[in-house]
Structure formats: C-alpha cells, structure tokens
Image 1: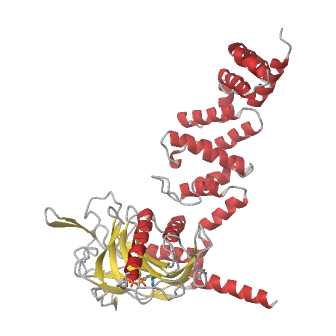
Image 2 (image 1 turned 90 degrees about the vertical axis):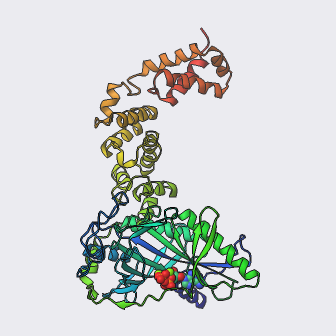
Image 3 (image 1 turned 30 degrees about the horizontal axis):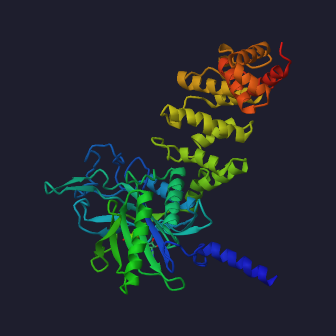
Length: 522
Ligand SMILES: Nc1ncnc2c1ncn2[C@@H]1O[C@H](COP(=O)(O)OP(=O)(O)OP(=O)(O)O)[C@@H](O)[C@H]1O
Ligand SMILES: [Mg+2]
Ligand SMILES: [Mg+2]
C-alpha cells in the first residue's frame, strides 16, 4: 500500500514537473558519458489579418517591399499604438492549447536596441508580465511532456538585406510591427530528435488552432535553440543560444554540431562561454555571434502608451468554448476508430499544411472528409480508399487534396458499390480516376452503368466467355495450370481482367478458370 501511494505521488509529481526533471539519464551512443539539455524560444507570427498595434495588413512573402507600412509601423512622430484584439484572441487560443494559465493582467514593455530595421529604436514586448505562463506540451512521438515557461506577445522588426558586393543594405518595413508570440520552453529536451519533435508538435498545434502558419522556411516560425551539455548527475552546463535556423532538419543538425563542439571544449579542459551563435548550413558548424559580455543592455521599461491588458474569466472561457479539436485528441479519436497510427498521421498531415500549398485548418480538410465518408461505413475501408486510391491518384496528377473535386457522396457511394460486390475493386478505381479526370459530379452508379462496369450476375455469361478466351489465348499456360501451377493460373486471371477491362471479379474468374481447366478435355 505504501509503495503504491509513493508510486502514485511520484507519477503525479513527474507529470506536474515535466517528465525530465526526474527522468533517468539514457546514454546516447553519439556522446557517451554526456547528457544534453535543450530549451527552445519560438517566435511564431500571429495569423491575424492586421498587425499588432496598427491597422495595416499583415504582409505575405509575395508582397512588394515597403508596400504595407503605416506611419506607426515606420515610427512617425505622433503616432500611437492600438492593440489589435484579434492578436490577443489568438494568443489566448495558443495559451489554452498549451494548457497555460492566461494572466488576468499582463503588460507591454519597451526593449531598446538600435538597428536599421527597427525604426522606433525599441521593440514592444511583454518582458515583465506575459499574457500566459506555465503550460505544457506532450510530444507526439514520445511520452515526454515539455513545460512551457511563458507566452508573450511582441512586435516583429523589419527585414534588412545586405549586399556585400555593393556595400549597401536595403530595408523592407513590411514585417515591422506584425504580431509575434514568443513561446519559451523550459530546458526539458534531451536530444536533437526530441527538439525536432517539440518543434513539429508545436507547429501542428498552432496550425490546428489557427494562431500561426508555423512555417519555418518562410520565417513565420523562428526558433532560437539553447544547448548545453553536462555529466549525468551534475548540474546543467552553460548554454549557448543558436539563432536563425530555418528548418527543423537544420535545427537538429545544428544541435548535434553544437553538442559535439561543447564536449570537445570540456574534454580539452576548457569551459563553454555563454554565447549567441549562428549556424552555417554548408560547413555544418555553429559560429560565435556575440558573447554574454557583449549582450546589449535592453533598458526594459513599461510602455507608457499602452495600458495594462486586462482579460476577465468570461473572455477566456468564451474562447475556450470555441476551441477546435486539438491534434492529440483528433489522433486518439481516429485511432480509437481502428485507424493505424500511420493512416491517422497521413490524414492529419494534410490538414496541418504539410501538404505543399495547402493551408488547411484541422477539421476542415482530410480529417473531416474522412469523418463524413466513414460516418456509416467501415473506417478502415474508407481510410484505405482515401490514402491509397484518392491521394494516390491526386499525387499522380500533381494535385493537392485542396484541389480534389470528388465529393464525400461520390466516394461514399463508390465504396458501397465495391463493398456490396456490385462492381469490382478494379472498376471502382477506374470510376475514381474517371471522376477525377472529368471533375464531374456524376454519381459512381451512373458511371458504372454507362461504362457497363456492373459485375455478376449481369455479366455471368461474359465471365465464362472471358475465361475460355484466356485459355485459348494462353495454351501453354493453360496446360501448366491444369497440372496445378498456381503462378501460371494468375497469368490467366490477369488475361481475364485485361479483356474484361477490370469488370470481372478476380476471385470468381479464378474459380471458374479452375473449374474449366479441370473439366476433361473435349
Ligand atoms: N542550461 C541550459 N541548457 C539549455 N537550455 C537552457 C538552459 N538554461 C535555460 N535554457 C533555456 O534557455 C531559454 C532562455 O530563454 P529566455 O527567453 O528566458 O531568455 P534569454 O535567451 O536570455 O533572452 P532573450 O529572449 O533575449 O533571448 C529557455 O528556453 C530555457 O529553457
Ligand atoms: Mg527569449
Ligand atoms: Mg534567448
């Protein structure tokens, strides 16, 4: 009894504190005798129509430079910030999705530094009182739960591009003033792979609640990765922060390189100085950007133009009640309906924008398509038709799921026709291809009769004709099959399928062929 109570307490404690604080060290063969610690600061662009403090539109990467800049974004004297409520709502949605505590009172501060893409000379952020604190994110591919320190709202800067040859820097202020959420994790990650899993899980979560596109390549989701190493059992080592990583893959490579660099220093009797570092993708090396001593003094101060942000319980619960299904819930629901992990992932990946060019929201794309078709049908059969046939054919056509014209009614009826044996699987695929090519909304049953694809009993006599035809066309194979060679029998079945253009039922053809072959020769 005593033991059980302790175990119970222990598991609750680990869950509350995050799995890592009490998790035993698992040796990594890449760095025996060392333990790795990673904490990530994510800057995710808020998917609001307008910027954080001005009514200028949030730019797309395709917008021409300096085309979406209000006088406020360019820091004209006399302009004042006005907080965009949509950004607050999306910040709160993110906080709820991360199980964080939305603060009834948060505030905005100025972080000062001087750089050409920051016209006001300061960035407005939430340094002292963030909008939410203390969340948790269970990773998709393991039992690890990563604690979230805080979520803060802040402005993005403009973009400067330096042309070394011409010795000029061009400034694009489109991005200046767009809303960001800085999501800071506790140092709970233990390997490059876990860091990758964290970023992917977070991207999926933000996309599912519609608060960010989460696109690392396009810069709407930027990660600063803090890495340190220590001997198991000793306190955490000194961290270095790696900036400007633009894909999950390179982030994982950068962490690996940084771990090996720090170990080399420590094993050589040196120490790791706290630094901000960059990553060179070509040489696969991190390099020093600035040391802790060079870190600027940001002279944080409360922004006198912005009152504190007060959020009452009713506001938060009204957002809470309108939250969409979160990815881990969708996943569990799909799997409880008998889908494999892989099938669930394929459907969810489409909705969460991993399909190129598809900016979907979970629950409005492939998952809901599946939900509708499988409402009164076998979920496993339905998912097979979607993932293998429909997605397969779309891929052949270089089309995305968004471009799919086949309705849920069409696919539903098609599956019913095949399942009830009225048409064969092969005919079903022909009809599916036909519907995708013609982009028509004609129902599969109409097409089946138009193309005379209905199977037995309508074409019972035909089946015999096709089988006799096959035996006649392949006499040598017929002799071998008669002697019991089943491989050769398959060739004959194939011939029947070909001449019948897939209308014959392969099983029926096989048994009829066997019957015909075993009859005494005339
Ligand atoms: N020993 C450590 N090893 C690895 N990561 C660490 C370690 N200690 C802290 N971290 C991580 O470093 C990050 C610190 O981020 P935080 O935003 O608090 O401060 P900062 O990096 O000093 O400031 P800034 O926001 O200006 O970059 C967190 O994600 C935290 O988990
Ligand atoms: Mg930070
Ligand atoms: Mg940092």
